[in-house]
Length: 161
Ligand SMILES: [Cu+2]
Image 1 (cartoon, rainbow, N blue to C red):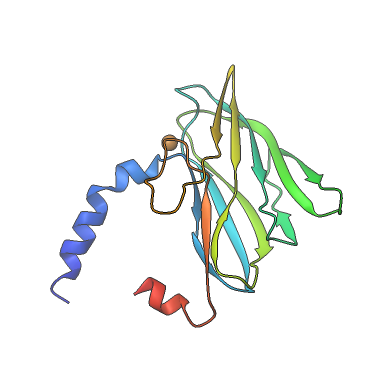
Image 2: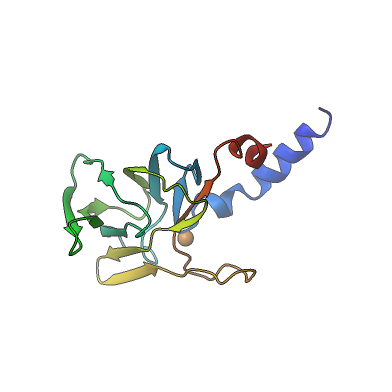
């Protein structure tokens, strides 16, 4: 127990970097086969410019996904040849000083491992592509795709503690 405050302090020390980092998925883990609503958080604009659109790709391993309508944002969906929802686009306006969360409900695949959701953030006169998928063992790039890791049933507790 005595270690806890130290761990918390270390976490807080890194919080500013995390809080404004890119497009981040929360929660970033789920369980195989579980229905999960994940919020994809846009923490800042493009070099100070307001965000006007977020396009999020749904990884092929996810058979069904449902985006949440967000007040003030126009939502459109894209489907692949098989009729699967493959991407969603929110259009609206988000000043650089604000953040917003874009939510998607989906059923996690039975297979564990990372699910990458490539995101394209469009701003007024600018664009940021959060689409980098790291190779195994290599450090994250400067524009990582948001990721949700699927853990096996019964493995969630081990992953969290
Ligand atoms: Cu960032």
